[in-house]
Image (cartoon, rainbow, N blue to C red; front, side, top):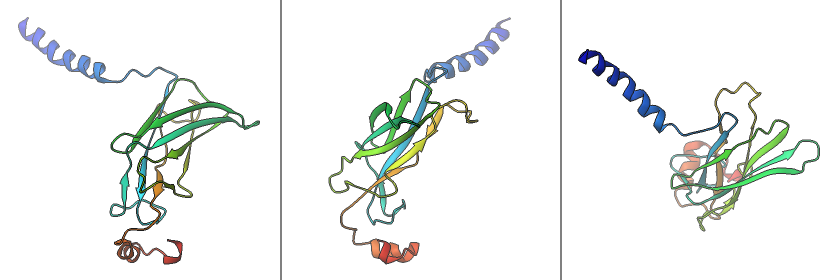
Length: 165
C-alpha cells in the first residue's frame, strides 16, 4: 500500500507542478511576441556581428477594419532587456488587418527606424489553421545614423553591395 501511495505521489505531483507553472491563457486569448534590434552596419538584416537587441523600445499593435481602414484595436508594449516584447490580446480579430510596428527606440545612438523592417503583420484569429495561441511577429529593427568602423569587413564577408549600405 505504501508503495502505491509513493508511486501515485511521484506521478501526480510533477503533473500538478507543471500545470501550476503554465500561464493562464483563456481559450480566445492570443499572444503576440517579437523582438526589437539595432543594426549597426545598415545591412537591412540582422547579423551576429553587427546587431544587438534593444531593451526599452516601444512597439505598437494596431488592428484595422479591412474595408474602412478604421483603427479598431491598439495596444503598446515595451521590450525587455533581451529585446522581447509581448502583447496579450483577449479577443479575436477575424476580419481585421493587424500590424505590429516600431514606435521609438530607447537607444539614442540607434533610433532611426530601418526601412522595410518597421512593421510586421500578424494574424489574430483562431480560424486559420494555426494550432498555437502564440503569434510570432518578425523582428523589427532600428539602425545607427553612422555605420561602425568594422562594417567594411562585414560588407566583404556578407557580400553586401556597398551602394546599398
